[in-house]
Length: 74
Image (cartoon, rainbow, N blue to C red; front, top):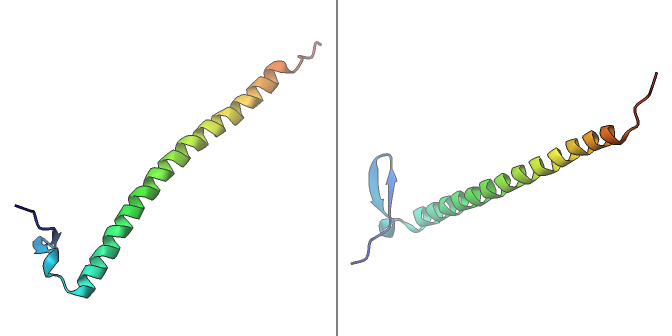
């Protein structure tokens, strides 16, 4: 027994096989966009994490410069 693809729209369950060609096209566009959104969010998480690593390294580089600078004696 194979399960037919269904979509819930406004609380009503619809079978994809009964969609018109235009409805199938629109539905496939929505599915593709949802998948792209997921991929982009995944990539954005990676970018944000990487940015934090570089930002922290940048901040640390100034701490190292401060530690290496000779202190003035009065």
